[in-house]
Image (cartoon, rainbow, N blue to C red; front, top):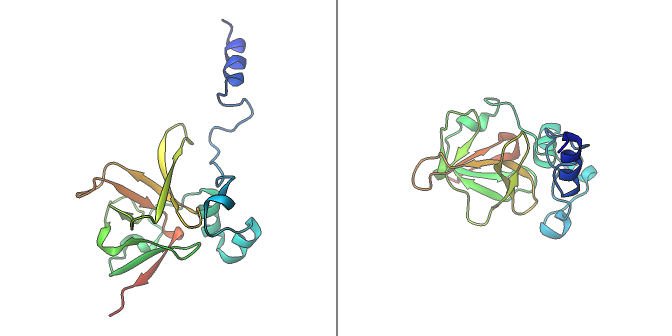
Length: 165
């Protein structure tokens, strides 16, 4: 079989289209208006988010490691979605992963959803806010007990609400 025939056959079977950029991050799910309680137009999101928050939460971007002050924050409180304010993680589940991003071993029950991320020539589990669909980061199976999971979150996708004294 000629290479050209193989590529054309693969694309007709639903493989990666020849025009798709393999490094391109997926956009937020098209059906988000039906799937999430909080929905906004792209212009509305841009109005309420900083440019960095918009890039991460709505365009599936990643902040540079070591740039978030939340990475080294170990105060008691709750980490909320910067897009909609939903509580996502508690300080009790935060740990220092050494990666340069805020990391947690478990989310608040029902606060996050996951999808398969097939960008950058690998398969990872992407983490989203279950309320607005905002991209938070990824979850890996190399975290501490009791879950063994590492929710590696972009700090700009979170806000911190200190516990009441």
